[in-house]
Amino acid sequence: MKKLKILNSRRFKHGSMATILTVGFIALVIVINVIANLLLARFPVNIDLTEDNIYQLTQESIDYAKNVKTDVDIYVCADHSTLESIASSTVYYKQAMEIIEAYEKQNSHINVEYVNLLEEPEFANEYAGYNVSEYSIIVKSDKRVKVIASLTDLLDQQYDSQGNTKISSKAEQVMTSALMYVTDEEVLKASLLTGHSETDISGFTSLLNSNNYEVTEQNITTEELDPEASMAVIYAPTTDYTNEELKKLDAFLDNDGKFGKTLIYIASVNQPDLPNLEEFLGEWGIEIGDGLAYETNTKNVYGQQGYIMGLDYTDTDYTADLRQPDLPFLSYYTRPLSAKWEEYSNATTKVLLSTPETSIVVPLNPDEDFDVNSQPQESHPVAILGQRTRYEGTDPTSSNVLVFGGDTMFNAQVLASANYNNNEYTVNLVNKLMGKEDSLNIVSVSFDQEALSITQSQYMTFSIVFMFALPIVCVIVGIVIWVVRRHK
Image 1 (tube, rainbow, N blue to C red):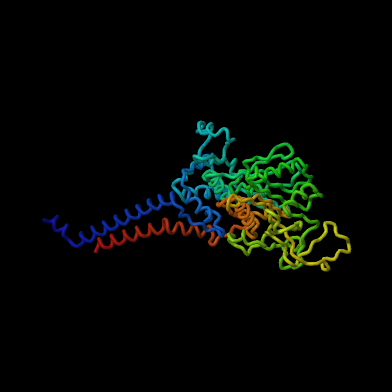
Image 2 (image 1 turned 60 degrees about the vertical axis):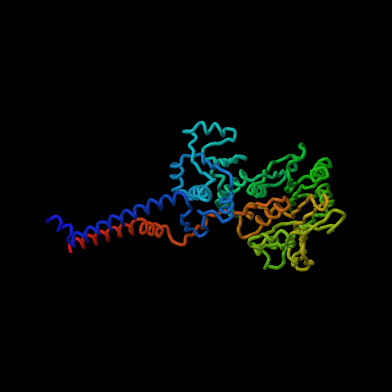
């Protein structure tokens, strides 16, 4: 009877209920913590506190990754714990790891694995033909394989005018490009023509590679142009083409009468006279002038030099898709162009970019008495598209010759800058000429001025409060309530 009285007592009932509630609350906290950890491991719920969100994918990459319909494996050839240790003390590799791992969080078709080549020799043998080594990244689908030689290829290193090193990340550019390469139904080919002492083409090559073109070099002095290439690029040659080489260009653009090919010619201030090449371009209605474009209105001048200016978008067909059409296309040390005609037989020309109406042309070697202020001011074309079109019924097919007045337009630093539209405009233009729908314009992320809206110390404080302190306080409060009620 005494035991029954204790069981029926008010103290026992309230104490038991408090115990049950406390135990239940603790269990709930544990369950929530387990679920949260599982979600964190699978879904992108990390908070990026950097000003430019350097640890997150842009919406462009997220949208592309979410739409992937085929299985893609991303293999990072490194021991995961070793790489984590390196990343813990190096922001470059930490950011690279975060970006790589972000892709599988967007789509269950994308899988990221870390593979130690020494511990898995069979895997190493499978990809031996791709020159895979430690820290290589392999992106693979059932269509094709893309190998990124090293994690260092996810970084971009530039030097400013004072010789200082500026390091930025192109991890997202490279990884999204690789994802596009292995999932696209068709990869377009581009031939970079060499053999005439061309200038550095790395910036333009990177632009094409980043947008999923298969780029190869061809020496036009010894090779025929690849008939499978959709595009050929002549980048600021410093010696003239022979008649035989020009016949190769003619044959490429004619494409057995089917057209559908594009040649991009990029001039340079450092070129001598190239009469054969310039005559060939003239046959497409485009002439390259002497001297340099110079802007007299300081509102359009960058870097306090009249040779550096923002250009006008003369034709709107290739600006409609620009995300920030108000950003300038930067030009500096650029040769003026001119169109011989707008329409002639089946040929047309179209001015795409031009200098402001307040610009002049300055000779390469002006006399001492040359007066900038006394020169006639007018707009000068610096990018012209020449086209020849044939019709199959009512369906047109064109071959294109696209000429830019300066190779400096495609300097790697300019292309990487978010302050100019050189990258995005060129990508949109080339892709439209190629009939290519997918384009990629992801700006490199700079590490030089990393800014946080809150400090790392504050971040750690918030993490401790919400992940540990708050649950512990709740448990303690529950225990106190239980003890107090038990002794009432």
